[in-house]
Image (cartoon, rainbow, N blue to C red; front, side, top):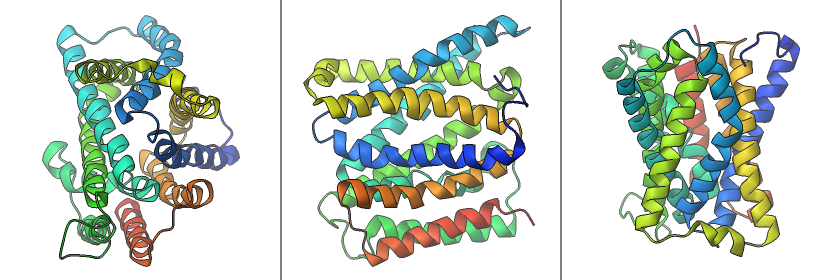
Length: 302
């Protein structure tokens, strides 16, 4: 799974760039599909189709492990799945529905800003002056994107600001999830805690949909191209990219790997303009530039 011979070093940048391009397609695809499908039903299919192909890898890892998560650890990891999968999905899918695919690509990839801000509190990571500067710059850019430069009212573009706040919240909870699950990944490897959290998160989403009377049979009412896109989100955009990312990560630092996420807002913007015709305003473009710059400042090694 994490064989260091999986990729030759010259291929790594191409692999990582390809993963980011695939992830960038999520945002216009979600924006397109939620017109005809409830956002949380779509979210359910994304993770349900995502964890199924990962199951053989999970079973293999469990068999190889000398020690396995205790029942208490399984419960904790499952609760982290509720945070990092279920709550994140509410923010991501409803946020994109109410806002834009471009804003989704940017605001849900501001995790390094929240990680740098919360790291000293949750995982005792030092907050340097450079990271502090990056946080302040990033918050400025996020405010520009969320408000579209209009500070007098939150009713910018109808429900857009609510969507932007949901997207920002999604980034925050994903940062919390990433930091809190880190110790279990160190202890058991990435496959086991990720699979457990993904399964539990999917189960929580299913329960939420049952209480909301949202049927998974909505998938069958979609046109064939949309069904293909849903399958793509699960099998390609979740399972395959996770496996590739995990293998690539074995040959590079986390900081280097995370820096590739700077490409997601850029490609997300391009895809949103080409495929669904979104037109970002000048304030949004300035905000995107500022946020991307802040993430670079936070991650840059000196």
